[in-house]
Length: 111
Image 1 (cartoon, rainbow, N blue to C red):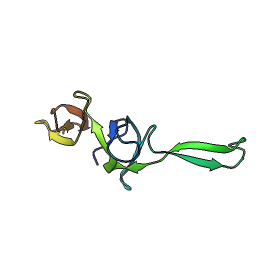
Image 2 (image 1 turned 90 degrees about the vertical axis):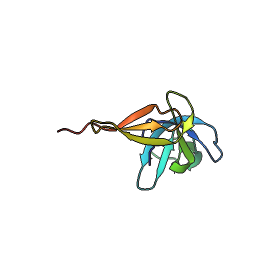
Image 3 (image 1 turned 180 degrees about the horizontal axis):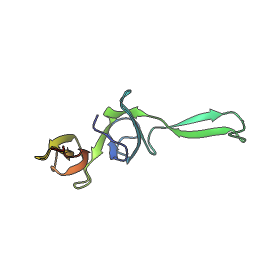
Image 4 (image 1 turned 120 degrees about the vertical axis):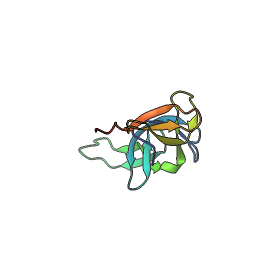
């Protein structure tokens, strides 16, 4: 899975299709991501000490990682993500459309 926390992503399917937002959390075992302002559900909550008023709460739920695409910071388009290894051994995530680097995966190897 090539989506990381803090990435700007675009939703490609579902009710929120076309929205762009930041990734809040990533669960690699379940292959899900939580995106801010996307996949919001209403939850009925009883009165308690934590919620003294009770009522209806809006909550962001995780969605499948295959429903989002990373937005390239340089070309501002939703794109697939590739990996590129430099000569010194450092590894970067790259945009498949324009070739720009998105972020670093691992630092250079020590000799």
